[in-house]
Length: 214
Length: 214
DNA sequence: ACCGTAACGGACGCCCCCGTCCGTTTGGCT
DNA sequence: AGCCAAACGGACGGGGGCGTCCGTTACGGT
Image (cartoon, rainbow over all chains, first blue to last red; front, side):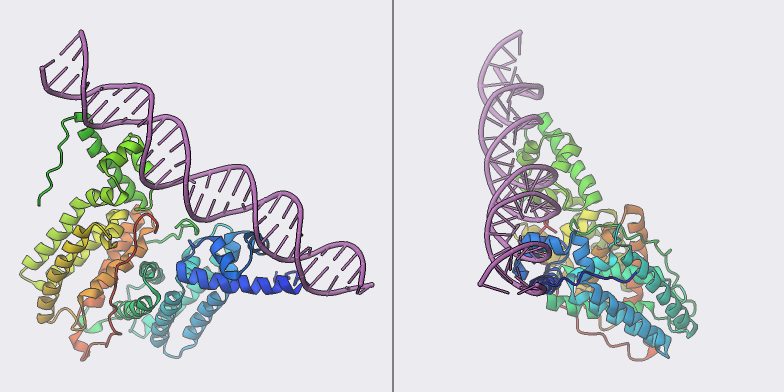
């Protein structure tokens, strides 16, 4: 099932491929997924046709563009699970994910969006969520993560994090850090207070929303 | 300075005006500010030209459309300030604002967006923020609101709340409620823990972002 | 009942984006 | 050096939203 791409013999094609991906990272990172394909093409110094030849659809381009950051996300979850202190792992995870999402404006949408086709995304997102669930369970056992927490709450906060993205890069990073700190504070158990403040029911969040027309 | 609108003698014109505003509330509330003007016109049962005659620009329509909700926001702040328990007032304010923003998908954008022209918005937003600052100061004096809190943190959370709006109405309301609860939890002081967890620096959030092309 | 005028709405031109076609260029093998 | 196929990019047609023009309708005062 691994991707045996043609590995085209021609050097210009290979060059253009990486130039396009670089451009896509820059453009989507700066302007979000709603950026026109032509903007990416211009930034890469190629024509629109070339772009579409390499990536037949916008989704295909997006998926490839953010593959690395998705891997970083997985690694973050893996590291968090490996942490001997689950609560510390959980906290670091929240911080790291927020930072990842803050640095690239497009990544959040690429990550949150449920692509009809690119089930790749959905598939390993599901798997990742299961891992987070396990991490959360352990963190709750230590008594540091509040009992009412469910995995959907993390999604809730990630969705909320999207709201910060219509902000210039620097302010966004700062805002994201503070947001993450508050989120962690909200998720922390407060045993001193006796029974923790009861929470309203957790929403069942369905991530329907397609890119390009946000 | 009060608005002495023509109060056009013709009944159909007056009717259409309210029909347009109703339609705008429905459409912008359901689909957000990016909804086409024509959609509003269709929903109101009028032609595009009629719509543009009543409201020369999209912003004008938006401002009028959400005037009532803005008043509700002001009232909420006023009530919160009047509350004999500042922390209780603060909490209620957060809940109420979140609910207001959850019910109408367009209102958040209308509220957060810094319109170049409609300085009305910016002006009384500024005034409202001062009132919130006063409320926060009082709540902090009671020791229930965490010392590190600044007014921009509330804006931060409102911006974050925007991230929830690409969700169908029911889920959005539920998510918003839970979000509000977590936010309040995050803002609450935790004196039992000794020094409260230090927060990263608060961002200076500038609300630049124009509607119609989100 | 009539008429003037204000209000109406279908239709137009503009711009931006999308995805594709086809004539041209160029890399790499012989 | 020469050739062929693969890769390139300018240009095209389609779709959708925006704001405006102008011929038509109908309100309301006389």
